[in-house]
Length: 227
Image 1 (tube, one colour):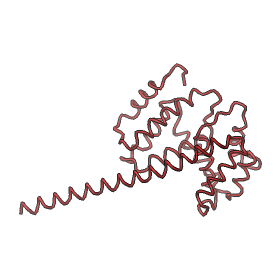
Image 2: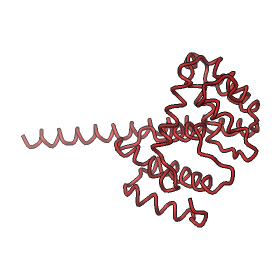
Image 3: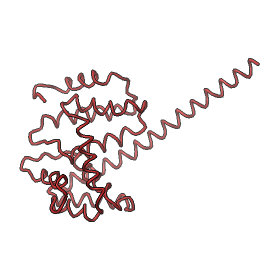
Image 4: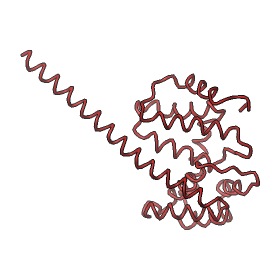
């Protein structure tokens, strides 16, 4: 992406690619990801690798849960990416490939690969982890989320307490050379915001359902009065 492009340029490109009204509940997600992707696209040392792709798709999918209309949800993701010079479809494929690789192995195996920076891992995962060792590697919160997400995709991970998995991600991040305090902060904020978003979506759905029931009762009463 051209270094001369501004956040305003990215926002303009986004609205051209996604000319739809966005519900208030999801505007913060859109604004934050739009700016974050813009800044990363200009960051020296940043590479849009599989670990980043896993983190980005996980964050988007988690925080866009309940988005209506559902058939615009993926279009929204693609527009956020394209507005900043990225290929959202390629990110989806990269994330899916990484998840598939991890899903064939146990949690202990995956933890071992991550802790040993890819040693013994299948080629795609090894390549993903070797990228973290670059001298110019640029860390972002999406990397931390990607790390946690990979652990969650391993065989047997669904039987593990979520807090234990998050703790494992903290420790593994440090062994990979990531700054533990930043990983801790980013994953804690991610988990807390996911909980808040889940509650907000539930409240929104309850409100919509209550309004629908009110309209149905009003319509039924109107028909009864006519007869």
